[in-house]
Length: 343
Ligand SMILES: NC(=O)c1ccc[n+]([C@@H]2O[C@H](COP(=O)([O-])OP(=O)(O)OC[C@H]3O[C@@H](n4cnc5c(N)ncnc54)[C@H](O)[C@@H]3O)[C@@H](O)[C@H]2O)c1
Image (cartoon, rainbow, N blue to C red; front, side, top):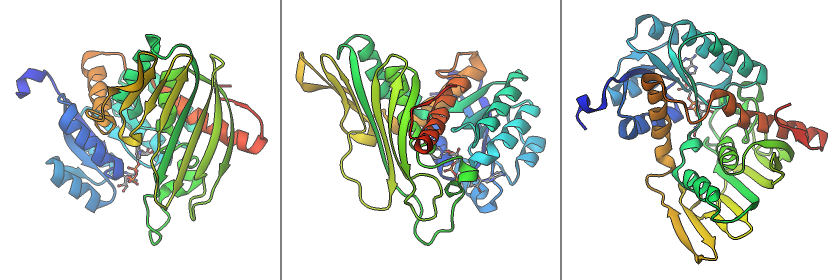
């Protein structure tokens, strides 16, 4: 597409050039035509320089210097959770539009301070949760709305993940509970909580067991929970992280009175509908464009919210739901009782 076809572009700084920044950059390149990355920031010079070389945007070695000298109107903050608040507040103060990777922060108090600060500025505040844009889940939500599986009876959401660090790596920031705010549920598990909320509505309360078995990770690496939705439907959630091999996983399954929607390719996405018209299954969503592309879809949405005043697919207050659900799970694992998510 020629540059003139897309209208004005949003000049964006990538803040934090670690693991997820590469997925964001790929998403911007292929799916966010109205974003131009004009700065990259990382306190580790080698990380900033590598991203700068990849993108062709100038590198900065502190957020402060980028805000003072850089040429951008929005930031995409991809930092350890305990640094979200300080960075977001500095960017609001500097008049920047802010896209902030989930979770909003490492504690509820910190999330609330960020929301309070965002409410006092005119710029956009947006939380990046790419599961909101997973094409197979969007299609499943549409089909449920059309009654394709009848009345929803139950659901299952499963996240199995291989540990991203080797045995000789130093303890990374996400392994400190004080820095990350928890374990697997607050981290990758959150992306399997959002689809449940998209398909079944809001979660009212949870009961959970957790276990920390991964060496060096202080937060939980195994979480098993039941979620009771405001509709009364009860669904299960599993999140497990370990260093072994992972077998096939049906990671999302929604059962209704007439049929089911099943994600048969696990984390690659893709959805199959089973009902009386399609007893052998009808493929209703493929893996491409798929979940890996959703980082680009979310950042494109951010650009439309800033440039065109579009409403975001999910507000920051809504995006607190995964964090609150994980926190309720942690309380439940202690209390051995159902715990409310939003109280
Ligand atoms: N949506 C997803 O699928 C997904 C996946 C992984 C991580 N995340 C989220 O992305 C965020 C970052 O996680 P990550 O896995 O990329 O972490 P990471 O550790 O790989 O990257 C963080 C980067 O921030 C840099 N950094 C640290 N302090 C800094 C500072 N003060 N100023 C500038 N740069 C600084 C580090 O050098 C590092 O390069 C977290 O919020 C995490 O939950 C989301």
